[in-house]
Length: 80
Image (tube, rainbow, N blue to C red; front, side, top):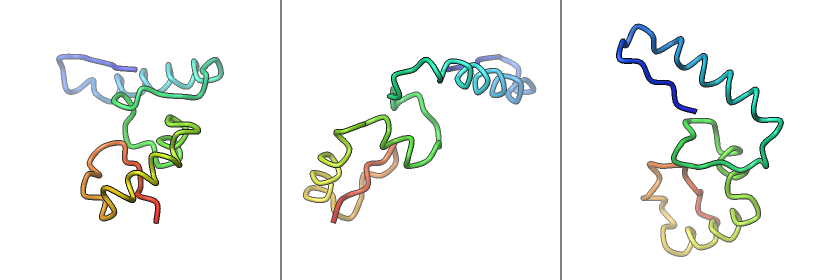
């Protein structure tokens, strides 16, 4: 959900609207997410978005980016 208003004073109301709308729709979702659109909702949300692919991707990340250099995103933590 995206709430946009040219007046920064309305940011709180826009956020409240977007969160409320998402929560109202969530019971009807398939459980995934478009990762570029989620905010800091925690690692569980990232894992849920990737579903059954998360563990495979974490192993790949552990192989190619074990120090988690590329972490400024909806991060997949590298598997050991």
